[in-house]
Length: 543
Image (cartoon, rainbow, N blue to C red; front, side, top):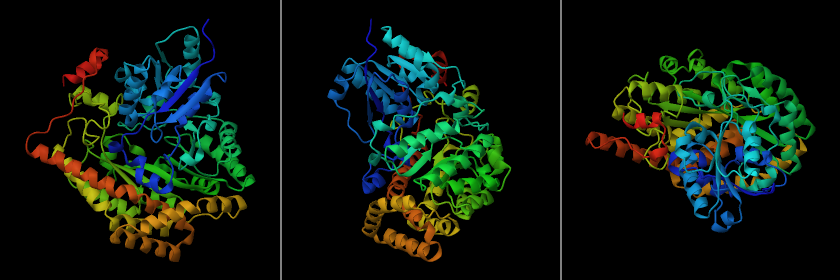
């Protein structure tokens, strides 16, 4: 009878540097942390494993993986997103070279299981629903299998407290919790509704407060991200939860400061904005995508199309939260002048941190299915990052591809010079009305963060003259006009350590793509997934 004990090595694959700014390598070096946020999904999986198992976690974003690590394990478990795919496949091969079976789960394998044909086990969908089945099979001696959860049926009220004890908090810039899964909207290009459904499911208030209690008991103080794809997807439940979170924060002297992602209709809801402010939310990311209503309607993002996006962001700023935004170039509904519209909107809304992206047809979305039907989806469209110069436009665009790229470059050039970036930061810092939490714990948390702030100040002081001038102009402007926003302005200024070089490198890549198109040499990248590729994928390959 196989033993019920097991040595499990959980590995969070590395995000590919060329595919996302979100890894912020230069900022991490300045702050002395390994990565921005711990892998909450794997920490939750670890909590679903039997307590008799010996569980270790390696975050490959900053920790090395050795043959000794693999040799000590009975099983290797990995999971992640599309941006981690390249490293995940390499980890599977390394583990197999040492004779170790591999389990892979998470959103990327769920969307593209054929890519992970080398893995011994696949856990598709939400792990809470099928982990017992996997464990029963493993304990019975099975060493391969596919375990697929029924879509959107996981009871997340039974999800355990993540194994925060497996990490060192000093390795990360902030910690993470989750309140809900799913989103009620129908954006054509988004895979969240495909993975988690359009009826947002929430944990109980007691659950989430229990997770925060776990962080608190382990000694963590500081920023915590609610990693929900849309925190306000279920407004009824979040309204009930926030007053309880406020009471929890008050009892402990506000040990945490929160950030999250939400839809822009938050800006219309003054009651909800007030609750989030009282709880101590300071940053919210919005998928703005485009300021053009017709473009938004064409991609089914009607929640943005029916409101004044500038006013919505202004309301968020007025409630004391810094808004950041995602912008996308390449939608089918775009017209000439799209770049100017984006630039004008970002300046008018005073949004400092903007994530401009080229549209991606993610696997198994409404958009990718439509493109496949129209014969516009490139072969092997889910190419992993690092195997193409720029991530995005993995399909035939409605506008000439060269024109889409040129508009993208125009956005980069207009928004990411030091002058442009810091000008927006000064305007945003003036608009923020931060609440004051005068508690002993909040003061201690600020003092604890002081060494990191000093490292940022020193690095900015030693940067090139133009950047140094913009930074200190921003510090003095914020000190004079809104001292309560100063520490946040310094953090946003520090993000430019990475935005500057990232945008320069990205621009060079895009220009090479444009030159390749103009020479008639451009062609979409391809990749052979081998005989395990499903019929649908083989059909895509013939497009």
